Image (tube, one colour):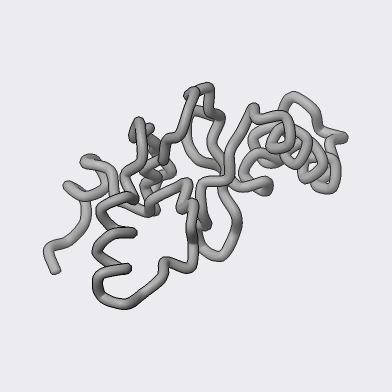
Length: 115
C-alpha cells in the first residue's frame, strides 16, 4: 500500500481486485503477515491498529504520519534517550518497544493550519 494501513483500509483497497474477499479473511492475512515478519504493527490511527510493510533488519522504529499514513524507518533505537530521561525523572515507559512513533509528515504538516 505504500503507507501505514489498517485492516479495513487494506480490505477496501483489495476489493476491486477481489470482490468476494471478506473482512475476516483480511484480518487473518494481516495476522499471518505480522507473525511472519512481513509487516509490523505501527501504532493506531483513529482507534484502529495500523501496520507497515517492513524489510528493515535489526532494531528500528517507524515514524508514522497520523494523517496520511506515510512512514519512515529510524535505524537503531530512538528510545534510549527517552528511557534514560524517564528513569531519571522516576518514571518507567509503559510501552517498552514503541515500534512506531506518531508524527506528521512534511506534506501534512505544511497543510495543517497554524495553531
